[in-house]
Picture 1 (cartoon, one colour):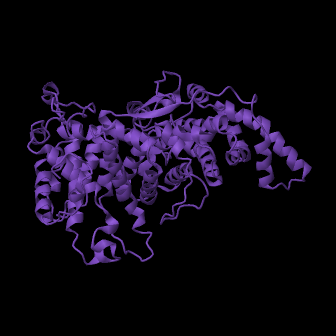
Picture 2 (cartoon, one colour):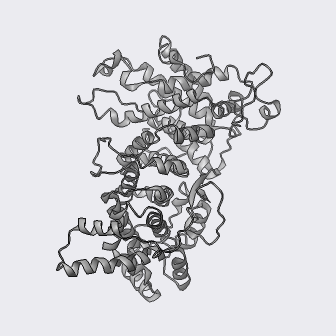
Picture 3 (cartoon, helix red, strand yellow):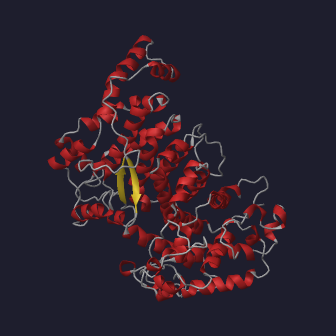
Length: 577
């Protein structure tokens, strides 16, 4: 693949020297493994001299290597990888090319991880050939591979990238959806693909715009949700859930994404996903609800991210399914229960995000969301208890739930929340303009803030006790007015229907009544739509590096390339002596 075109069909079929290529790529991984032997808190992405030479502007054959690796990965078709797609042919065919695809993805991720972001603005010489300015090329941290990824700009190339990612990621569930069991091979390098997808979204602004405006982005949402759903209980797959969450958070910061999620969801997934009739927005909310109520404890630090994702697309959610409505209101009951509300000083931030979701839908999408309105009316007591909370009642509930000798099971202010989910998130309006609102407590999900609060509450070893200042902050942070006005108007309507029919009222009748009721003039003035966008920072950058090298290390054990006892970037557990 010596040309500079992403779409090179020959890359997938020149397999004569695959074994040689595999050994060369393993050698490249071994030569570029400096980060593995540096502690995470001391890691410097510009320190490796090997990497500096490999990604320099004058690196020999860098364009050829970049496009060869990229073509090898995105042109691969797992369903047709051997013998023209004949069922079970993967059982007796060589997997040499599959191994080449996996290593190509790993080497590409490693080459794209070091240095500084690439400049997406193309530059050409007088012969109309792509070049890099000399002043930019000799800048400390320059990475030619990140520059080439950032400058992929033709519609054909962007479409090839997108179709490649979709085809490979959908293999995670399509390989299990076959009529003949295990008749199609399953690609195991989906974590590397997710890293590569993340790198592309971060480096190339045109790619993000392209998939949101000219592609069906829901084709990416389905495998992301499937991977999160099936990995939620496996503590070894916590990193996988994290990177899927980051990708969804990145996408949810765009209005086009929220609008696209209204497409009906009809894909059959090979997992115990609850049956529902709805859209891809329902798929995301049901998946995230399941992770919260039935996932690994190590995912607690992502709860705010989950709710931020739903909050970002909620103003555009035209019709919420019955299942999603019930589950979101169930989450409100869960997070407002004493077990969660008094588990930490900032535990109410989850309630603030949930209320924002409800407010967005009530204010902007009331006509098509009667299921959510009815679910809120049915659980009116949960909202009422929160609105009427007093300090003596809060202290009594807290002491009853957590006696002095008992620590909370769920620690909302746990120090490990600052590890990854402590994200820098910027509030913007739906047009992308930054919003400056110092009083908006729900928008503070910055990791350094989380770390600070955890040292004052959890770090002292003392249980949280409600105070007057805490109660004042809680009331100021929870936007209850919209839901309260809704309940004030609709609860009497439902009570009147029940009285007239001696308490026997069908839910369908109530939903029909809600459809005919207008809330114009009864609700507060609609608030401005707030979208929280992911902002890169050094903490998440280090996490991505550690996650990527962790994947590379685990996938390079047959035969092993690295000595696990010498690795300092992350902890290697369970290694055989």
